[in-house]
Length: 453
Image: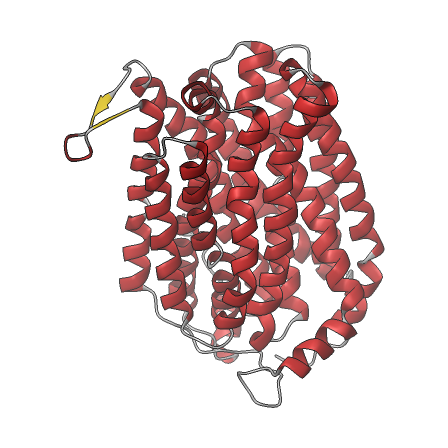
C-alpha cells in the first residue's frame, strides 16, 4: 500500500526542489489511497447489492440506475466546483477530513433507507462528501511530489479504485454471502437489519478509520508551482484566461476521458446483475470469482500507466501522459465491448478481468495531465471542472444509461449483455476520438508551462 519507494536520485531531486521528505510523501499518498478505497467501496457497493435492494424496495432497473448514478453523481459534480475553488484557497487537510466523514456517515445511512427517496437522499450525501476527494488529493499530491515522480504517485492514489473494487467484490461477496443466510441480522444497538442494510452500515462506519488516520498524521504541504501574479491566489480573470488559452486541451481532456470512464462505470455497476441474470451466478459467487483477479489487474493498471507515461516521455514524446491515456482508453473499449458477449461465465469473467488491466489509465493520467499543464493555484478548480464532467457524465449517466437502454431500448431485462456492449462501444469510441483530437492542444499547453522550471 505504501507504493514504490523513491530512489536515491529521485529523493535528491525532490530535496533540491524543496519538496517534502519523499518517504513521508509516499506515506501521505498511501493514506489518501486508503481513503479512496473506502470512497470507491461506498460508491459501487450498490451494484453488488442491487438484486437484494430491488427485491425489498421493488425498484426497476432505471430506478437502480438513478441510485447508482445520478443520485450520487449529480451532487458530486455540482459541489465539486465550489469545493475545487475552496481547495485553492483554504486548508486542504480540513476539507478532505470533513469530506471523508460525510461520505462515510451517509453510506451508513443507506442502510436505514426504506424507500427509493430516502435511499436517493442518502446517496446524495455520499456524493457531496466524495466531491472533496479528487480536488484535495490532486492539489496535495502535486505539492508532495516533483513532476518527475508525480504520475507514479497518482498511480498509487488511484490504485484505491482497484483495491476498492476488489474489496467490494471479494470481501463484500464473502460477507454478504454469510449475511444472506439470515433474513435479518441483529446488530444490538442498531437493532435488526436486513443483510444488505447491514452491509451499508459496516462499510460506512469502516470509512471513519482512514478519516481519523488522515486527520492526525498528515501535514498540510506548502503550495508549489505558483504562477499567478498574486502568488497562491489566482484571480477570476487569470482563471478565465487560462481556460481560454488551453481550451482545446482541457475540453478534449475532460469530455474524452469522461466518455470513456462512463463505459467503465456502466459495467462496474451492472456486472453483478449481468452475471446473476445471464449466467445464474449469484452476487456472492460472482464477487468471490471476480474479486482477486480484478483487484490484481486493477493494481497493475494503476501502477503501469504512470510507468508507461514516463517511458513515453523519456523517448521524446512530450505528450506521453495523454498518449498513454489514449492507449488505455482503447483497451477498455475493445475488451469492455467483447466481455458481455462471451458464451460462458468463465470467458466473460476472463475478458472483464483483462479489461481491468486498462481501467485505471483514464483516471490516473487525467489527474496527472491536469497537474502538468495547470499552475498550483488553479489545480483544485481545474480538477473540479473535470470532476464535474466525471460526476455528471461518467458516474451519473453510465449506470443510468445502461438501465434505460435495458428497459426502454431492448425492453427486456435479459438483454443486459447487449445494453452493456452498446453503451461501452458508443461512449468509448467517441471518447477515444476526442482524446486523439486534443493531443495537439495538449502539446501546445505543455509548451506554455513556465512554473517549476
